[in-house]
Image (cartoon, rainbow, N blue to C red; front, side):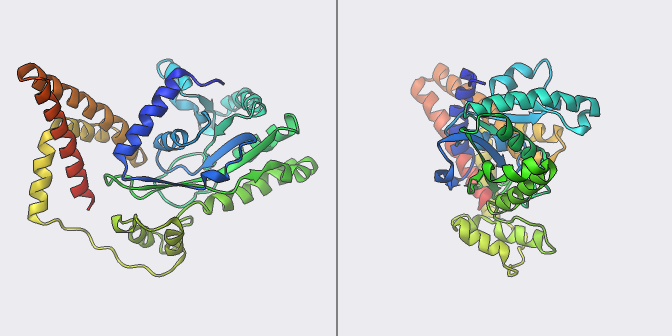
Length: 348
């Protein structure tokens, strides 16, 4: 699958959007990604389609995405396919539909034989939780079946990837995008050829641990909720990944009290909101339509980006037509700076 021009357009605009929307994206371990073979990216899935944006934008090779089949229809097909997305069928899509995965896997085998990059979410579904949920056997099956069928001289690697959002709702939150040590599939082929299921299970077990190593808070325990609230605060965003991991392993944490903004802060937030009131109301309405909280960060990114861009164009035209182009630019600059001032006040 060759990348469509629309893929590159979205990648470029996505890079700009991520710079504006998040309070920084720290990329760790990109140098661990081999340059001599095919790649299977295996990230956790806690941000709906935002995970695909973050993974694709910051990966050098064009990435093809295995995506749940129920989002494909006659209206979305052209867009999704131009973004290198391929449907993957699950039991919930109907047991009879699972046979269609054979054709999808054949396409993946061909792409891997051409040393391309494919992204698959091993958890199989999304959740806003920071810990790794049980992964399916699908990633292991795809990887080892591909290794068995294509030219042995073509190397195939799985790259465990951790997408660590500091917040799914707080503005200007930071992301730690962590690439783990590459998993070389040849190491599993002896066991796979002796007994396929044992090969799948062994790779699944190792991939689970490798993915946990890329997450700040990899497991759910009795203190998970309190640790999550303690670790993922704005004041900890300046810490290193290793320091944050150590906090996750520790049993020491502090209770986080609800924040109470003072009167002056609330006044300033209202003031700066006025310059972008309509797009902010549009985003609020959009969030009310979709009930799944995992989509919150994705909808804010896409919807907020579109609504604000249209608003700023209107702002410019009003100033340019009524007064002059200089006034139009001043209007836009005021709206943009007000947005960042509002977001910063809400974050801190």
